[in-house]
Length: 320
Image 1 (tube, rainbow, N blue to C red):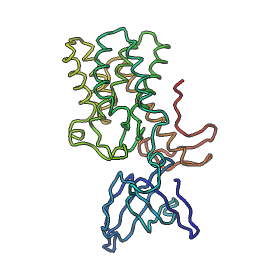
Image 2: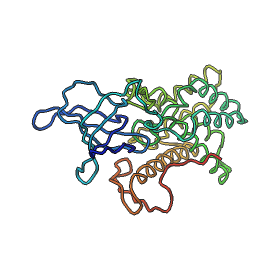
Image 3: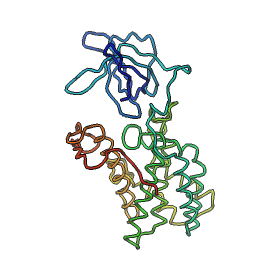
Image 4: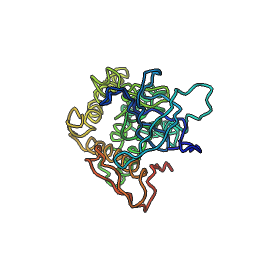
């Protein structure tokens, strides 16, 4: 993390409270269990003997001062002073909030150009209807709360990665319905713009009530049905698109409403999983030195991952 070292051995700086929970210690006192983050990484932290004098919550930018200590072999920040950031503070939000290295609007335009080139008018019109309706949210929305692409603009970065992988696969297997596959790839996570509750920083701070009760897979299928009715499109292609959205998590235990039941749906599910894993592995290994292992990653089958150091572990997407 990018904290300034002070002469007294302490460190200070502006950070984001990625997690902030009020808990009770064994002696009965109250403390805050926190995860600090900025664009360079994150670190667990504790604020002991919390008196509730300030209201701190997840998604808030704060200024902290304290010391880095060791706990179970890992760095942990012991906070001695903390306050909410104010409008007069001298800091750049871009240094604190992780975001896509490519602007969401630039990626949105790249996707739009692809859709405008579709030969299938039904697929083109459905996808364009949804994209144009959700554009303002899509270009900044993260793709996740805590896991892959949980960054400002992450939804667009995740989407274009899958779209470009899908295009390459279609070159190898010409029997794939390319426009159907790309349509599903573009729309598979669009309802996350509705599912997530965003903080002022643009990151996800939780889920909406409707998002918890229904979820983005079902809502995405509803979006497709609504767009088709508005455009008076009555075709099996509408159902195929809905199935791809409903099945892209692969297995019911991972949230899929149904397993993929045709080729393009299976490919979309696999590419979605692959892109998420690539992001997670890059993110995890970038936090350790070459020749070292990460902590166990519960999102990746509780594996410890090895940074071999042969390439950069930073997540980069080549959009050339």
